[in-house]
Image 1 (cartoon, helix red, strand yellow):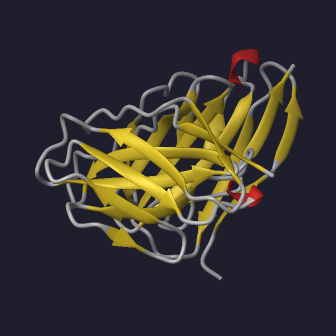
Image 2 (cartoon, each protein chain N blue to C red; image 1 turned 180 degrees about the vertical axis):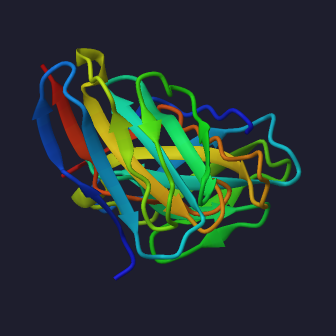
Length: 114
Length: 113
């Protein structure tokens, strides 16, 4: 898996967009960018993933640069409940009997403030 | 409801007393995995299973055992727990591997005295 780099912490005002950056300069052509979040000590929750096109779902938007070396997760209208640790990880999205290992970095702690 | 369940959710035990943390998923997923989470160290993978009867070590397997006798269950066994295994444990599953969306259980908080 390609290594990712995220800022350790960020703040965001409630109601504003939260933009969480992630660097993955060694990403391979067949690796997807995944985002998960972990609220307090609950189990991590999948948010979104993408390969090279921008993606949007009901939770967030994912913007991937043209060279795919970085991406940004956007929470368009952050609420207090979005306070969490956000993990950016890179994975090959195809079956491989030897690819069961899974690592999560330290993520970004997002604090949404009133 | 599609989910991953873990039991128990909280456990206090003493050094050396064997324990098992159960994990079950109802999504017919092939892949299951165990992680531990400690302050400042993020999520670290203990063991994973690509399919029934197929298990392999993650990054921190020492002191743990697993088994995968049926697709839905993936228990984590601590044969002789030690205080350094005090941690928050998560089980996860996905359709076929970590390259697919992983679904996590609610966590088991373990304290070994």
